[in-house]
View 1 (cartoon, rainbow, N blue to C red):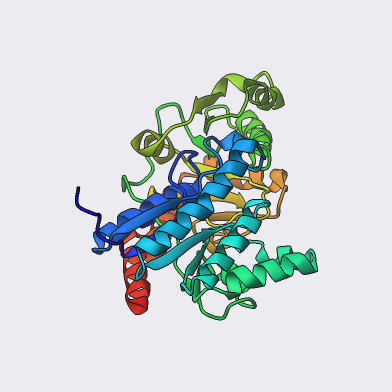
View 2: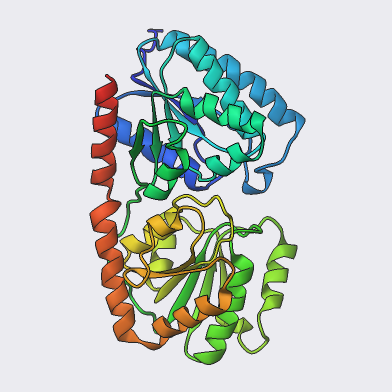
Length: 365
């Protein structure tokens, strides 16, 4: 059997499953490399196979960590001239794995691009001297750092001045929102795990549906347990519960069809390290305005009053007021819808993403 030719790019990351922003963007990045004529080899840093395993520890994960370093070392040896793109995280213990991998790359004299898909490195560095040293080793040792938005640039620039902003992208259907015969629709799209906003969405939906009898809500996302889903339903008043549909996890065109039928997408995540959720970009692509909490890098996507509204974290009453304005006004919905699509076309297209990475990887070549 002929030996495989060396790759142009070594990618240290993980493809789905589990399905979340970073794994989906890994797939998008690999596809983008192929489209611009670069071959890739993936050093799979898979520690979790489902969303509920993220953040946990186990013997399997420990063995996977040992295997990761072995596979990375071998890949570096087989692909001596390849660029290295390293998807990083600040979630413990994965962060310390990143620090160790960055040290291995430096020992082997390999330059690497740190591809940052989370905010909060400055906060992490401020939490202790050891953490600060780790952040400086990992980010400071990179030849360049790629972040998703301007707020994330400010988060890392003190550790590495060679920062490039390349926003995420999504592809798929491109059409304006299509109201359903059931009346105005508000939609929530996220894995149903604490911190991602499902509880506040229930409170927002409960208040909005009570005030707009013709409206309904759809919840798209998988739940870790049926108990948690029951707890979410219990937040709703009996009189509106039947108008909230739990659609379960949907993907690609099935999810797009639900979102495209929405008057507003609600993203009340309280996770302080939110970066640039693909859910928001999908909504903008489909010309659906977004109501979200201003946490992490959300402000890089949602322009208050232009493509939706930004509210202070956990202010679900104000968020519900904004949703009510959209549900009650066809003209406002149309105005924000146009702003949503314009935002996507000007900042988040696949063409822009491909062009930015071609430029950066060519510079390194």
